[in-house]
Length: 436
Image (cartoon, rainbow, N blue to C red; front, side, top):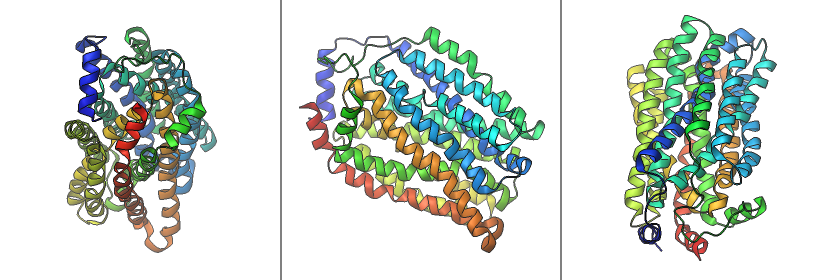
């Protein structure tokens, strides 16, 4: 059964949407705003990394741990039980509580007096942010029909890039005008009133509204979700491909500002403008186009999502090399634009496919399982690998060691092309088995 056929069946069985389009667009916009703050609070550390390192006297490996593993471990492990709760309870309440916690802990980062205190505060940010994406993915799947999900997921995914943009811009200015501690205070506080808005205005849609005939009323046991996902060849190779991309993406997000400081001698405000605008505009546009193009071609063949992801994974590599090794910073930064645009295009199709590979009461849990692995590999290992390689290569290459560290993780991202293509070979069979 193709996506087009499935869409006709769903529209015939569901006479009209549960909510008006104006409200679902508002809900998506509000969830996007929450995700933007998620990434502001998560990513502001990157622009402040060099200042914190000098202030606290830490190594690159320690800073890689702080920006990656310290956050990722608790983010990923907290994500599973929170997602199980989201598959049974009020998703809007979970999102509001998580937003309150991670915002408060971002503020707490500004009061840290040593490395251990800052690491503990980042752990708190990670636990709070674990309550963001899994329940949101579940909500979006119930707000929007299957043929519009990749586009909706892509719009939501633009929060990654818009949040990183604001983090770089605001962080760059704030650390120049004040210091890194004040930057944490200012970016953390707005999340608390936003959490109240989420709790008061976001409505809970009927679970499985766009999948008529769904009779499941209780969340599926966790082991069954795991069993379903990992017996699907498509999910396994999709996971490997996305892990490669995640390691590369988080490595660049964490260390690109430091690269520009060390190699091109750029200042904080200048980096915030150049890098922030590039990541925000090119990344958001790439994520949106990936979902839009994927939805268009997947009407005829669901495998189009994976073909698109494979193509952009390969096409982005040459631009990464130019960004890292071109001596002229204007040309280097110009190459970063297509690198980031192409690198973001797989995100919407990825999350749409994962939601389509499981049953209704498995969706938040499925997102959490994928996030668990992606964040351990990407967010946990990506910044840490780059920091470790920096320290190992420094005796030979000095400040330019970071060029080679980042190129290493970029090459790992390029390997995703192989695994996206392998996943496409089994997608139809796995979707058919799920519907039977």
